[in-house]
Length: 373
Image (cartoon, rainbow, N blue to C red):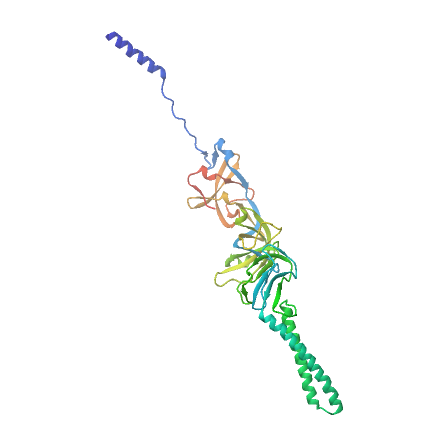
């Protein structure tokens, strides 16, 4: 019995010896090797993870950021208001309709129109009577049967009646109301376009003093972006400067254009100034009153060095750029940065034109690096 137990123990010992020692864990190589010169040799399998771009000279002096909304260009839209207090009897058009010049927009009923038309009739009768009186007095004065004073007074009444008639006609004509009879008249469009908005309905009472116009007509293809810029940017804004804008409703689409005009004044309450960016091409999806972000590019005679914004990193208290000095070898460069120029940043010191800089994934090389721009 004892021999059997010893044999089993020996067999177990031989079995365990045959399995061998467990494998040691694999060692992970660091992402780079620090060279004596202070440069970094990147691990070969990581080189493809980095993208490079050359530092380049640019004549861009600044890129100004503004916020605003899409609006109609000057003379691209107009409001139609009622000329007299009136009641709306009928509306003839719907929002979105194409409008022709002279087209009736609504039929209204106004006691003021009835009064003016009645006045036209009264004055026409008065003029006829005064004309007859003048002609009769002229004959009597020639015969010595009437005084010249009576003739002068009759001529004055005749001239006054004609002036009043002309003034009443002009009042109706200026309001686009035809002479005639009755209290109804048509409110008409003065130029072609598209009906963008209406604020009246049948049965409603409207007046010239209403806050909203009865109809808004405009050309939806003639749009600009009116944006506000900080006061410090006012001296740099100029007509003709290239601009671009994005509209959240259209996603990331960037629409290029030019500055149509820049206001030469600063709002004393908001300390901002306004400029309008007109697109170079028509964008059919653009609509008035959409919010927009505008970028105006200011160019100067002096060229400065720029790199992509993603190339500049923070290491402790320094701004750092990684420059490729030879394939797979990088060098840290402390730089002095200037203005942000859209997707680029201005470099004042620390780089030379043509230096290849890392633009992406540089933070993977050093735990102390952090993207700052």
